[in-house]
Amino acid sequence: MIYINQSGYFTDGTKRAVMINPAEKFDILDNSGKAVFSGSVKHFGFDECSGDNVYTADFSELTEQGTFTIRTDSGDVSKKFEIGAKVYDKLFDDVSKAFYYLRCGCGLDEKHAGVYKHGKCHCTKAVLWEDNSVEIEASGGWHDAGDYGRYVTAGAVALAHILYGYTLFPNAFDKQNLNIPESGNGVPDMLSECRYELEWLLKMQRDDGGVYHKLTTKGHAAFVMPEDDKGQLYLLPVSSMATADFAAVCALAYRVYKKFDSNFADKLLAAAEKAEKWLEANPDFLFNNPKECTTGGYGEWKDDDNRFWAYAELFAATEKEVYYDKMMLALEKDFPITQLGYASVGGLGALAYMTCGRNDELSERFRNAYTAEAEKLAETAEKSGYGAAMTDKHYFWGSNMNLMKHAMIFAIATACGEKDFTVYAQKQLDVLMGVNALGISYVTGNGYYRCNYPHLRPSSADGIEECIPGMVIGGPNSRPVEPTARQYIPEGTPPMKSYVDREEFYSLNEITIYWNSPAVFALAFLMK
Image (cartoon, rainbow, N blue to C red):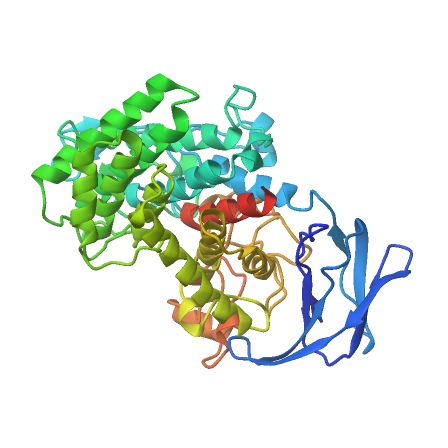
């Protein structure tokens, strides 16, 4: 078996394949069977996370465009793959458009959704959890994951990944045509898609500035189409994390949207500052997910990093010294400053300061932190035969989130620092797209051997065999939640192989908006 990136390889980028059968030499064959490149197979040795004895083939020097296969002197032949300048275009568009397919509060029409069309969903008013007599119109936003809930902290982090992708690598987004209702309106399609979520977030803010934590039914819906989920919607209590993350992402969005729609941008900034006033009046950590509500909790143990992120974004947006002072006070607390969410957002606060135009000691501190983290992850990747910057501890629920967040760290350290970690960011994408111990693409609709049965209600209920494209699957999990998963993943299975493509295993096969968003960021970096 020869494991390749099933989306292909850039002409002038890093190109690696991994195999588990011994070999000494390899050839790259073109469509006619002619060898256009030859090289030596390197024996990496034992790979701990996969349990494999690994061999690698590097053909980065091959810059010819076309369709190729790899053949080793031991007789193994790979599937066909592409080398070219646009090999990631479909993948990038698919992981970006995945958010459109998750829109709530509207129908998806055939013109834009094709066979995945469906009727309007979740358009009834929500009621307050604490007082069911109070009704609020809060339709819109994105379904968060395999369920139909909408969660502020998760949405804020997903938005931040994408908006920072646009901030740092705008050219990758400017040329996209995602075929969404807003296409052609003069705004990059991905920003129009993000606006759909931002408009919903604004509805989640209370008059006093506090922000409701989530909008869900009491429990998860059955596996029905979204328009058939008729349960009562509830606005769950305000939390300090949701309010802080709301303030942060609205301030960030202000910076992004002000050149496209100043009125909308001003509305976002006003909402962010209003949320900050609530934080000032409520300095204690606040979170209450009622036990009677069994939808996702998205709880955290403290909000120090959330508040830091909020103050950093507000300073970046306004340059008001009061926010700088609060940011510095928040920074005195103990939390990591290179983590990118959802439950640890200090790295987003650091990124806010790094992109606000100040080139001072604090900015250097943050850049150095990202560089140090990238160097540590690069060491981990070098110890992996597959190039994954992952240890066994990273293979838990949503491991591909870790994989792509590590790609983000490599990208940020490269874009904002003085060292180039592009090769390592590329390797993480390679792993996602098939250079892994199962040889599987973890993005639906992309790759010849790909996931197709995610824990995703509309994909189950729509009666269509081929899954909605562009969904990043959670991936290998050495500690699956579901006891029946052990029928397919015996105890002792290596972490990278602890996966099965079955709908019922949400701790392996769910999707979420904040697993797709780091993939959008990483691809934007590689395509810039």
